Image (tube, helix red, strand yellow):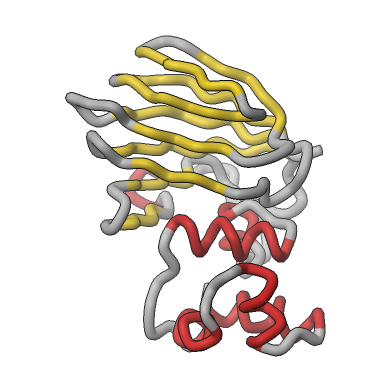
Length: 178
């Protein structure tokens, strides 16, 4: 991912300072991320994806030549943000040529993830709660979702995912690209 992030910045002719102004992430942190010295947090990854107009799954998939037909559970990419208590599993084979992807998220009790802007405006999401409770805010409207509930919305502004507890929340997200 580090090489791809550096290439995206170079393709746009942006300096680290330009990207820092766009994302609100410090120049030194961006440099360390591009050199693979640190992994981005969920908030950083969200800001970088917004700057580059990509979802996290598509960003990861851009280094793969062709999506596989089958992705075994043990081969699915899992990204963990220990600081916020967020695990993100890319379930389906993501690829820039595909219009949809399936992601599984898990938030520990008390975890709170906020995204200031969508990575791709108009992106459609279907969030299906597998277990637990999720407070999800999208488009300025808050929703308390419980096991079995499914919320469909388009990303047009800030979103927030919060696990009120007492148990973790596990959910699937179907992401549909415009």
